[in-house]
Length: 414
Image (cartoon, rainbow, N blue to C red):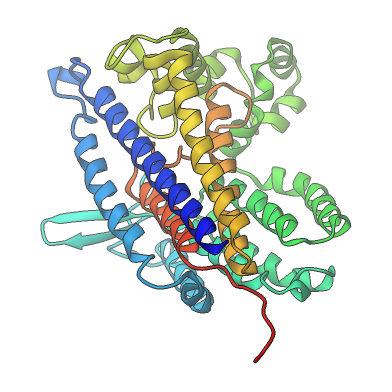
């Protein structure tokens, strides 16, 4: 029986790695397309994105090495060190915040945010985003805590996993990085549910979150409110009401609303992303084809947060289905690995990673078509970014690690 299970897991792990490699290649090709579509940038200079695909290949190589690295030891050994790794990540999350009071040379400020740590290696430098690396580490630590039934079956002991979530969430929110914060809370609830926490306890926590949300809303920066309220502001009727009612305007965007500013600023990314997706039609413009690929001004961040819109623009509905099918394969492989493992920690670790991937994919894809707020969450394995790709590769490596080891069997003592 075990030999049959082991053979099945070999097939599942092979499919997992194939899906991962294919999605990574699709990301590199799309990044190459948007940077090398035959159109020069300002003043006739080459596009600033022209060499990003080379960097993405380097990031992919580092991610592959990291994926191999987490397979050098059993995932159970990693679990034993989970809290130490978690504490180390918390220290890395604190460093960008320290830069607000003491100018640290290795903390760059990009777009008024302190999210990165710069690692200098001679003439080269690499920016690492601790909040991205925090994702797999958080799932690892939370799975290790929830491996015992006594740690989630009554409301009082839920304080432990809540604190494990609250500490990095608060630090990431102060960077600020709203996208990662909005990802961690659903992962938290998903893992509690998978572990077997009582539904009434989860409902009580959700109710408390809803009661606190109005206070958090008023504490948000205007641009953070706009990102969330933009989903509602797609309605012509609501935009008209906001323009004519100052109180509603301040509630939604934190300042005076105007239709012109909506089209040219607040809603620009959302509107253009929907145009890029819709213009792709059934089959798209083809590789390196279409105005949204050739001109950066049509859709900023098209190599990063909005890369799915570019995939839709180039390859149309058929291309979108193909990419989503690869993600379904990846998620299915993760669930198969979780179901085949009888170790509570291994099962929770695999299921938590699947939940994190699923939430991130759904949020990124739906935000490009206006169904969810623009949060800045990347598309796993596809979007440009070293930290994002490294984080996703680490997650795949952990899934493979859980699938490699023989499940526990229950047998009487000799």
